[in-house]
Length: 245
Image (cartoon, rainbow, N blue to C red):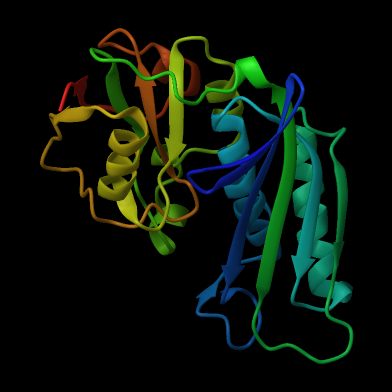
């Protein structure tokens, strides 16, 4: 059976769930026409984090990663791939199979990257469709994009933080905040759960702002206070609770 859940595709085979997630990046890098100038190491680590975060948030572990690079292998592609490999190794994911392709037919003047991740877990362990009335929702990190991410590393979730989120028993469900912002993701949670969120959003949180490269994440938990912030040492902001609509 195949199911679309948020931005994920989930394939069920007996008691196993295969989760397919993806992400893309464009105009960020060190090439002539890139809008945001950063090193290829930043490109590789940031892009792989987003696709992996989606899978980790539902409790799945990556098996295969395909990197489709719209750049030449030498030197740009090699640098991006090396950054991806290092990010995986540093976060206990060195066993993941990495494959992909590069652009060798035409010269490129702008960086482009696509990432697809195939992950797996037991179907019963998926962190989806388990939200109930009375549960609480908080924001980990802050929605940041572009240069803001580079300037505020203490407010940005890293891959290691998403690994902790995946392992946490107190987190019922988690959604990385994407380019459509917190408001959109809250609406997704309401739609999926069939409940309304009694919002208690502080004024310093912009719920319409792009979340950039999964710099923040919405987490659902049973107790009002979530202890996960102590494990990852990033800002935790209470956002409200689930009520019957």
